[in-house]
Image 1 (cartoon, rainbow, N blue to C red):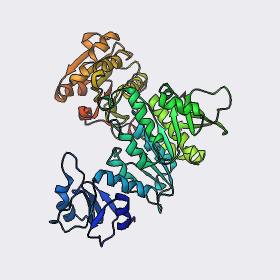
Image 2 (cartoon, helix red, strand yellow; image 1 turned 90 degrees about the vertical axis):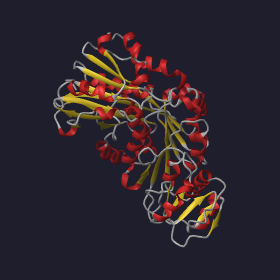
Image 3 (cartoon, rainbow, N blue to C red; image 1 turned 180 degrees about the vertical axis):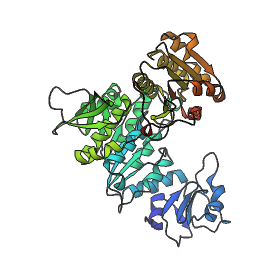
Length: 473
């Protein structure tokens, strides 16, 4: 079990104890409702002032509090600092400096979580700490860092997500990664970040503002942005992942991958082929994945190889990979197929999911249940229309567009060849439910988290591993 020295915490936080704790501090929490015995409560000033919950945290087992003002009514040892969030990161940064293992930082406009999950799996889950769920922001990152344990963890994989200019710099200093994976730079969180060029600059800060000089791995399309092209021009401490088979031996700053599809009695089987500098080419079996998710697997495999994980270990572990809830899950029921990918959405992830769905279910009646993409700012209407106009539409396709933002796709669908009878714009889930439940074919649910499209999934839909998948889907 971890134990944190109170005096070292005071040093890292640049604070002073109002009564030193007697009980050992074993961890940290920002939620007074779920705090456990021995944890320090961090009173964050957010939508609600965490200081108002010091008493509740104490009653639920907290052994100390990190505060910017003392509450004498609560008999809790309190570490007083100027600003709790800054000091929380200071504590996490200090603890990061004591970690002996390798730390990987993962960021990108989409694909962060699937890449993080894949990497943790193939590096060995028993000896790899990784971000839990979606705790990837200014609060989740220090909570993750402060779980690092030299007695248990050989690696740590930390996901870094932002939605405002300037946020990545703090995360980078706290994570201080030895290796950085950037999955993609695209149109995401533009309300706070302003432009895709700003997205690129912010993502690059994860390696630019690290306390060490990390190895950086990113796909070739990132080179269209100056923050990445200048790294490539420097020629050191980075690897650019390129799609396709190399004409010769890869250079030290590049790697190549391709996805090989082979059709057999059981349908299509996929393999990931990877070429690295100074290493033999190798091939690994893959589950059915979209092109974007397959590239994320390639990034994770490349990173694991660079960290010293053997090809044999990777090949044994990779077949265990399954998409997490709401992220690319494929379900089956009553002879129908359901693709559920509605944890979040931006133009890149929307296109990737739609392309995969249309390819997997060619020739079948298909229903696209699409929600809007959030935080795209003034470019929202045009980006929605562009995504829709790129869809390869067949005669048996139908579209349900949920809500105002999704309705911006209607003109794009008509531009792409759909007729008006194929497109419905609905305002609430109850209106859509009968159409989904009665549809005999394949159904895709894709949209931002706010839409909660998973509520439309029929009760009879179950994991596809437990059923026979019909031919063509």
